[in-house]
Amino acid sequence: MLSNTCKYALRALIYMAKYSGDESRIGIKKISADLSLSSPFLGKILQNLVKQKLLVSTKGPNGGFSLSKPPGEISLWDIVINVDGEEYFTNCLIGLRPCKAHDTSKPFCPVHFKYEELRKVTTEFYKETSLKIIADDIEKFEDLVRL
Image (cartoon, rainbow, N blue to C red):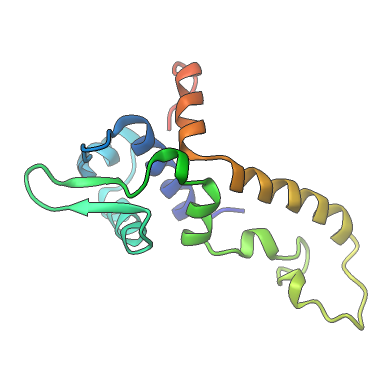
């Protein structure tokens, strides 16, 4: 499962993909109010994403955060691996250790091969789904989806 930190990061970046333009920045107070997230916690998350070069931060009266690249160039994969790491995509479903660290002299866990199929599909989804795709899709469900 994704951590709450990662879920908040995904929500914040989808929000920015939807509501910020090329030159505009969005302040932390606006983002946290619109997404109903704690401003200090969100601030830590966003600063980490600045360090990971997914966001750009500007101080001052016209400051705030914006995406470092166009929304079509940032995938969900980019966000998840920068916040939670690759463990979500590599850990064993039962053993909670990376399958790539499996001792080949021992059998795989009972769900390994079925879960491996799901892991591949999930990985593809995260890699192929950009912020732009989600931001564009949200408009179709505006009355149902609250970031």
